[in-house]
Length: 378
Image (cartoon, rainbow, N blue to C red; front, side):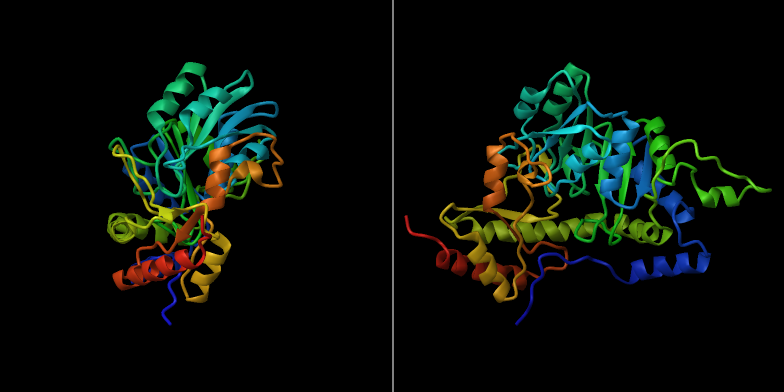
């Protein structure tokens, strides 16, 4: 039986060759020459003032909160329907995440929900490009401007997506990317902070290396420079091995995204008339990066039973993402009914650039059969 995984990284000979170059260079650690060239490539691609390569997107979100001066007592509005990393980042700095419900059609944060939550302690908003679909940045930036708030774009899933002709990662003054193994460009793990403000970039870069900056740079100085620790920093550096892989991956983004789009289009064609699920919705003013392909099941469908049946037949699937306010770590009294509903009814089916069309067709065939088998009568 052909096993069809939910996710699969597109890594090959070009990435191997890039890693071999790093081995030969003698500098595999972070903030070396490959890291610098990756940051230059990211800054050029996104047209931003600075790009800081980091160990993961969670690190980027944390450093963004620090650089933006978020403190205990502050509130930051966060999109609720997502991996909890944005809320975690707010908590890392002792502030309070306030959860904003999402649109039922896109799963992205609802601008009206954000506007309704702004209060005297609100300092900013973290919007999320949900599983690869950009949020409504025109409305979100207008709300932020009206109230003097910052906006951070969590574009972890959205490398290659666009909103009103602009690329995800450049839709807010500060953005955070992920290069985790299931993303459109990957080094296994990795991330980046992108910013229009070089001061924020410099702050993030310094804090990402224990507060002393690049050891590689210091080693190039004649004599014996001894750095001083002037602030608490973190070990959030991206290795030059990962940076080398990512430079190849960024060159391949369009090719890999085209393959994902073809998979999404085929799913859309084959499932268009399926009454027991709703297909993903992409507004006309944006494009999807298709990090995940999530369908929304009819309430009659037993999702757990369906997932077990798919996996038993070698087809990977997942629940989608999280309604963060429902997670035990937050114990929130807030109500985000749309997010809570999507959390119960979304199902992720295989989506990656290595999927063959015959595999897509098999996924659909089995999914259609098992939907009927696991749907309760009216």
